[in-house]
Length: 102
Image 1 (cartoon, rainbow, N blue to C red):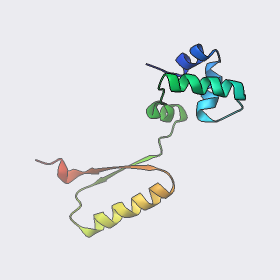
Image 2: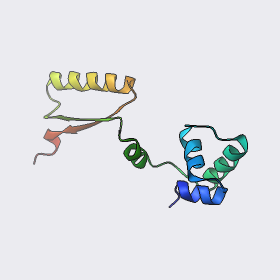
Image 3: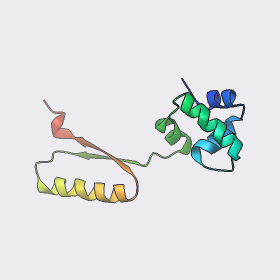
């Protein structure tokens, strides 16, 4: 499985340089950027969103549990949550309890 260390080893740059390039969080020379980008493309690397969230200590995800969606209150509630969450670039996970009952 391709990770930052694999890209670093293959590109000849340090893992911290690769991390800075991927996260756009610091200076990386044009030469290093081009080589790291080439290796990333060659290896079809995609950053792991779960690993990124764990390292940052935040997920930007809101979980919402509703008993059902048959009442207009819950429908309006979910729309309000989604509007505000998406405007703040959060993800929303809904769990509809009526769908889990036998």
